[in-house]
Length: 525
Image (cartoon, rainbow, N blue to C red; front, side, top):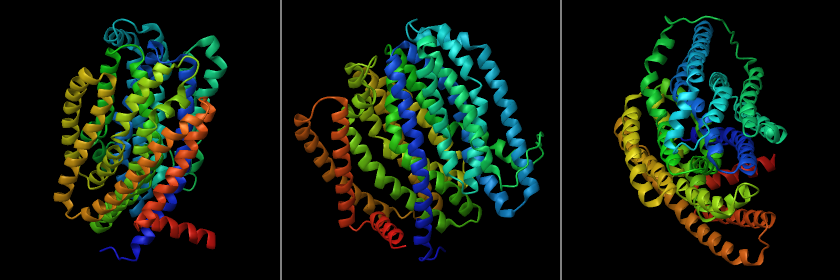
């Protein structure tokens, strides 16, 4: 049983590592938003940008379905187990085999998609009413498709470094790809159009791998060009591949369904949906992903040691920390959706009508942000316990429900209905997974979590009233230029954050009190 005195130490380790990852991830996410701003400014939201969105989405879909699913759910727990045993020979054999399998398999998949780019483009163009430029799509898809191989290796490197408690460089690495993409668009858009973005993506993905390689120093890993299918760990990992791929890849499959429906609604809707999701992903990626990145190696270790009490405590901390940030962040983004999209994208080819469209989608994406964060935590708990069946069943059901809800809500709400469907499906998933996990490992500290969420919700409600009325009042006195709107947003967000933290401190929340103690200790030193 976990000693009471260990819990503050556990929370401290999680907070310290999470804070560093948050900063690094924030830089990456902000650079991604800047990339989207440049894309919107130069190309707007049209069938051309839809073509780029699909050309990039396809290799990214395969990466998430195969590489990322295997890495997150199977590779990290097995790697953590070998580290615990200190079996370097088996560890090297396992890593080399997985690396080489990735290279071979994803090169073959990339080559097949490269060959069939034109038929894929024709299929997508038919969905859009024959409005998409097939040649443009095919060219960009063929340029970017081999990023599947490169980004899969980057993901493998990230998981290895995270397992050795190296989080910052892997979190910063995606920023390199974003910066390179921006440079290529600014330099070459006039001559090459949106093709410049595709070139920036493929070159940036190579640099994303290179920046992580020095981090392997000290891990004692030695690359060998061999594939040992007799290795029990390799066999175990790939025996879990299909259920893991479907369960973790359900979000991407649902995104694919969303994009197909969006493409059918007219020009720019796929791009608008993507822009909204990227903006919503900023708090999700900065905080929720940071918490999960730090927690997953820990819960994998706890599961390997059969430390169920430690696993429950880690889960409880992760859920409460995610709720502490995501609930107020969601409320703030819903209330300020229009000005946020305006200052991020509205310039040159991106019009005020485009702002209205993307802001409306963002509201419904933000409604599910807490669910998306908690879903990541719950899935990792099941995978650390080597249970791939449960998330698989829930994921398959979610795909069917999402398909139905997309079709239904789109008829009444247009593109916004697709975003609402995504959020509702995530909420249903959370509800079912919590019930099953409770039966599987027993008491999860639900009362403690619920009491924490009640205080968070009360604080958020008061903060939301402040945001709504302060924006409504102050907006009348500010110049309507983008710069002044940014200033006003900054003032309101800072004041709202101070108000929220103050309220949670008055409510004597563990999360706020712990943060205050940690900061005081740092300044005392």
